[in-house]
Image (cartoon, rainbow, N blue to C red; front, top):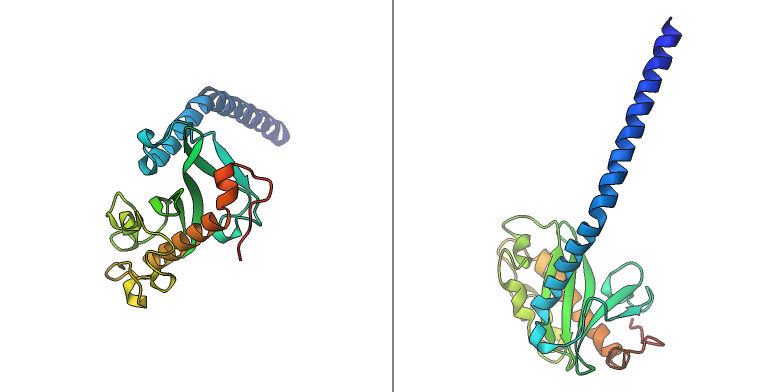
Length: 215
């Protein structure tokens, strides 16, 4: 009797699991295209914040140059990196380079850094972080305009020894009660500029054959 009851319950449970799996699979298939489109629009929106439409005439989302994990190690990203290229009449206007600052106060800070063809910063946006609300989260443009202070900066402006927060003798503001977070972002943005400079020929010529890696 007990055995029959267990078997019956098992069949019911199994049937329920199959129905649930089928519903989930159907829902995924039905929404996958819509989700992909939303993700594409979100990514495009972030890119356009840095390089607006009037500065380029190509599709930055699809116009990319891939760097190997070894070549892009300085960016803090694990695995190959796709750099988005903004072009006008076929000429490079800016490169949008993903990067990760691993040493935020609460872990990784994911960034995209736009670098103009002349090596200056077109813009920086923080895509994801876990920094403390009210303190470290000021790296997020939705919380403060601190991240805009990078715009126009380059490896020569400020000089290398000034690519630090003011508490460390550099040029960039830190936040009251939160130095670790801006310090991590400043360091990574500088590394992105170094990456761009080291690979400028490959980015400009759109030739992924042998872009240089930097130490």
